[in-house]
Length: 375
Image (tube, rainbow, N blue to C red; front, side, top):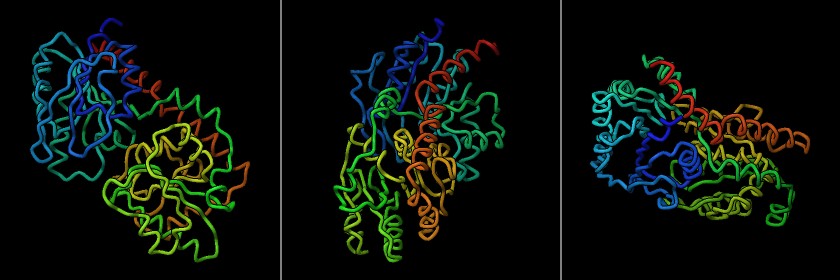
């Protein structure tokens, strides 16, 4: 469809994990990309110059949580027909783009979290107006779509875009994975291993995981735990583990960006636990066959929680409740080889069903096609 070549993507930043899907979009749809230079909390980006279709870096000017993207508004006057935006009400320049697009007869598409379920009344009104201005909404999960429909946003304009990482590369890699002695060699025991993978931040509440391991240890059971990631907020979770007397159970692995290594770590772990909330960690873990446990207070979750099917690809515990985490965790630590294989298979099927960039590309195709169908 020739109109695909008239897609303009304006986003606050080129997040590192988004490179694979952006590259697929560039190759298939010939999109033009205008990427912001920074966000409030520093995050890993890809090299913009490596992305086919990259046009320009936009300057983000922050005023507390609000920001303006210099150079973004003028793009509405270029010969693009479709504009994919972040769908962030905090982006003031997006409001002007949306209004001008209506006047000029151009189509706007949000690629956004949408609703969380913890919005105040005022924020809910602002979001409703903002999303109503968009012609189409690509939302990360169905949970948010359900909340937005209750707020009066037309369900027919919303599509579940899900999320993905480097899908084809990781799928090929998972076919090479096998059980290894990586944890036995490190811990010098055959006990089950829990993995956490992600940045070490206060709101990830890893202390709950350490407390849970201590409770298990006090019951005379042995469990190992590997923590993969960089401490970006001075959490010093290793010091907390020492204070709780379980430092010998914890492997502070540090940051790792090698998918082959991460694949081995996830594949050989019994379960991934993310106590504070879960985001792409869920997709990463399930991609390599590892079930995920996180809390079940959905308004305070990342959209990727929807990939967790209780009893099949993971479970949910009562938020901030260490005893409930232990209760939900123990069954996953006591599975046999055949059960572990069934869990891996279920995890792979969930990722292949929805959480990959092929699914996302199909959603983008459908969004554009539906503009024609309802013209």
